[in-house]
Image 1 (cartoon, rainbow, N blue to C red):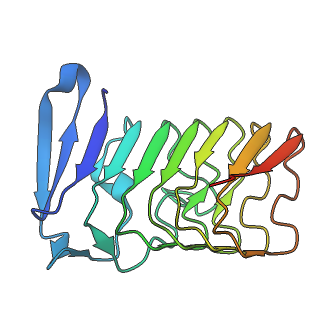
Image 2: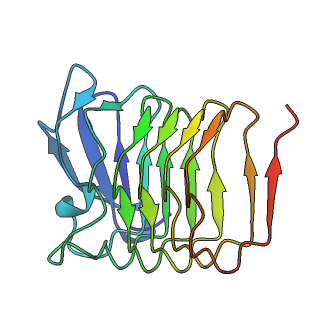
Length: 178
């Protein structure tokens, strides 16, 4: 993958540009496998397309990570994929808000998707919730027009009001039989 940032358990964030060339590293963003409050796109010059938060990295919060940039209502324009490793237990409010190019989200270990956590991403077509999700709060997946179907894990016990509001193309929701 080009334009990839990987947050690793060694406390270093690695940014790779075209042709998988290591572009830069960032230290000091993490202490004892717990990241500081930060928005990963702030490390980038606007080309960031892919983010991987490795298993074992446990952020303090993901709130507003990809909402903002220079406009608090817009996320990074080129972000296409993000993988939240098993250490990310809560996808907080506005974690992925209005990322116009976002296509795919993998959530390995989160138990909660907060209110308005993944909102307004018109090209989002795929969300892999992983086996740990128990709570999808109110408006948690609001206004993601690219979603046509979802498979929710059988561990899900709570779905808040309007969880799928304005997902105008969402036609089917399945519950994983496992």
